[in-house]
Length: 338
Image 1: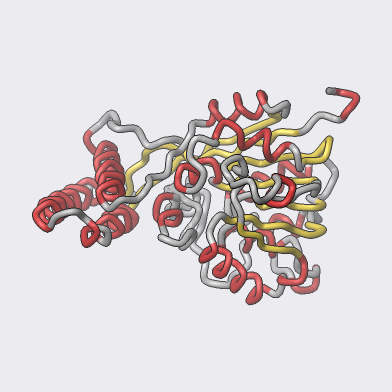
Image 2: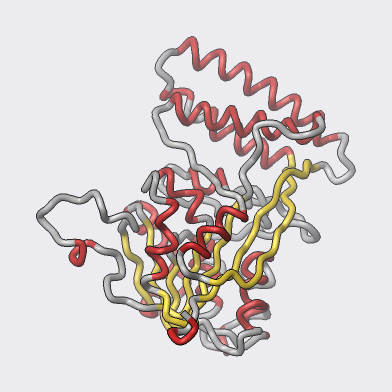
């Protein structure tokens, strides 16, 4: 993930979703040459020049000769809403940034989250950023098929009847297993219902971390990733499930969207970022079914902490490279092209 591209950039993300899992699992590294998503302070506007993934989207969209128009953030978080803010602020209030240079702007926005706590966090962010009156934050789930018979789908369907010029799915697909499992193959047809003909959807994601990696050094992070997920399961929580870029592209096409372009950004992990993963897992030990199991798992965490320190310390830039973040652009054909 760009920022620390893990968020894993790994990225999506820091401090997003009620358990903080989104931020931990999609947090990116800080590397001005190879990593896409940079650290941000609370209530700080994020420009395309600060984030390689968003910067790529801005350059890609500028080439169309149109602005973003009505904008749907289909899986919002503090980072994406802070980028949206950079495209909503009056020119006189904007600092130097990619989107400003490209004369891009957003007419209004709708930001969706499946979690009430996240909604409150994002609302606090938009109030601090001064964009509260320029859009709406909505709590809901894109999967509406499993509700009771008291309401019709029209009553509970997110964004019912709304159409947008641009849709952002920022690490949305990878997070769905935590909120709407088994619906990943339906998300693009669902979002396409709200995309105007000629409109574009931008999908940001993390290539799945492999169970094993070639080379002892890179494999350390695979061990950490497996341990983190094991702790989540033992604590009775759901893990996120990332999908590769080619899966995303296939399902965009199946939804009737035309994939136009894509880009990949290598991810590097510092020992500090690896420790964030281990400390997050360590925070779950109190939820384990037995103290003995928690004690043994803590011993394994300590061993990985030492091993990862040794591996990163001997690297020239003190980081491990493994996997990549990606962004995919797709367009909804005009009616006469369909």
